[in-house]
Image (spheres, one colour):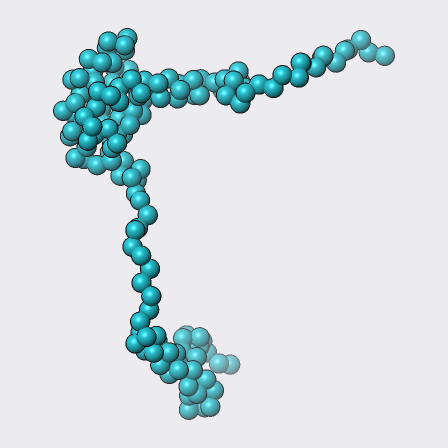
Length: 155
């Protein structure tokens, strides 16, 4: 017999998912993301109202606040708002001295809003006529199958 004992079961209290994620060894990225989100919530009111929906805080890298913006136009507008952002960041304890913006147009790609236009009767008739021409028998009496025998040799 061995003297090893199994570990006693923990009480039946379930941990909330966030708390469980924060107790894991990989908590640093989660904590950093939560910190960046809280920081963005503090800085967002300082952005001009037209700019706020087009940019978000991505990182704090050394002495830089790094934002992601939708287009170069918003990049320029963020540079104009940089002094106020730096002042607010310094007032909440960050030692930042500059604001950097990265342009990422992929983050704002929206699906096309074009409605589907039904095919007109004239287009439908023209398409049917083209299909009828393709299915007419050729001189050998077999339906024309254009393209399926191209480049092939008969043995």
